[in-house]
Amino acid sequence: MRLIEALAVYRRFTQAEHQTCVAHLLRRCREMMAVARPGEAKLPRTVKAILQHSLPRRERRDHNQMDERGLALARGRLEARLDRTLNRNYRSAAKRPSANHLCRQRNAIFTFLSCPGREASYYRAQQAIPPMLVTGKVGGGNRTAHGAHAQSVLLSILRTCRQPCRSAAAFIQQLLHLPKPQALQLITPSTR
Image 1: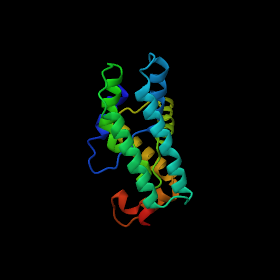
Image 2: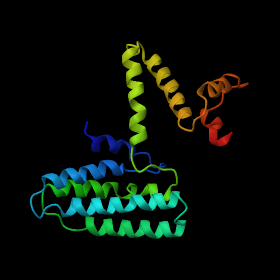
Image 3: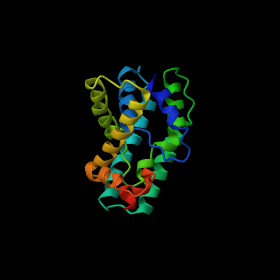
Image 4: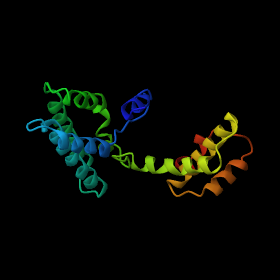
């Protein structure tokens, strides 16, 4: 399955705030520029410049060097610049799919600028996957669908606890000592 097809599934989550991986977009721009014929690198070069220009804005916000109003103005300028770039008529067959992909992802490219704590890339999510794959391979996989479901729930709890540096053992102990079962989202770290 291609990356773009896999990402289409996430667009179905309509109540979520989506973030397109800026690192993947930058890498794709560099790849396109490397193989572009003379005069055909304008789209990837312009998109790359816009994306690179957005990252310091987040840093300035995170270091309290830019207020929310300034950040909103900067985001609006970046979005307008991207819109002008994408509204051009690209005749090259190589540019059309990339421009179409960016148009589909347009509303999720700069989410990290309006949501403090949101990453601009999928790096952390990608780093969370290999340990689960290794566990499955070393353990020989699961013999039943019920076992696979139990493992996925347990691994999800362990990884979720690890991100805010919360003790997984204490969290599981808290779950086991509840007087009656409750939904997990009721006792997450944010609602303690």
